[in-house]
Image 1 (cartoon, protein in one colour):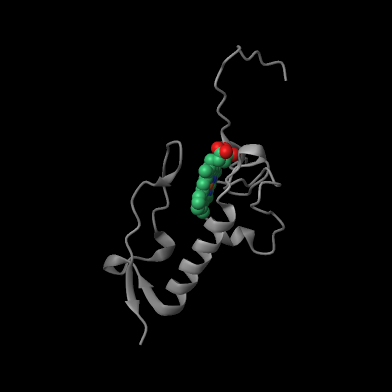
Image 2 (cartoon, rainbow, N blue to C red):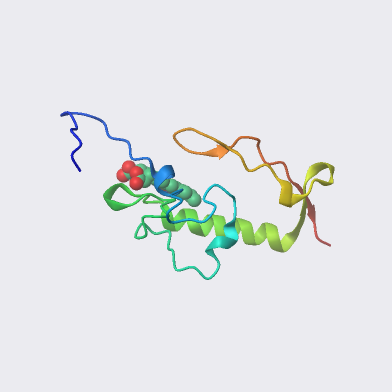
Length: 118
Ligand code: HEM
């Protein structure tokens, strides 16, 4: 693509920018997990518009373990506990701003109150 890359350069691919492409995603910076309902976009490295585990030869080898752990943990928390936010905050108004780094985290850590269901 007419770029000159000097020998021995370290190239960083900005996956965050690729995965926030406004040409592909509507409202790309909004936290809307429901955008994936009914979508065929897959997270296993084949659909380049969504690469949470990377792609190609260096993609995450822990994908199966990561996905199963997350599903088990989330299912357990959803089934066994009632969740709420401190001070009766409205979940729809939760600040989902990100803190930029090599990996992304929430700018304000999430605080949740779990009450075990009787
Ligand atoms: C939901 C959980 C996880 C996410 C979202 C995740 C995400 C990622 C991403 C984005 C990469 C970089 C891939 C690339 O350069 O293209 C990576 C690499 C890697 N991940 Fe994960 N990961 C998760 C869980 C795990 C687990 C559970 C393990 C180990 C048990 C693991 C081990 C690794 C290793 C060793 C690499 C480096 C692979 C290499 O450079 O060849 N990950 N992961």
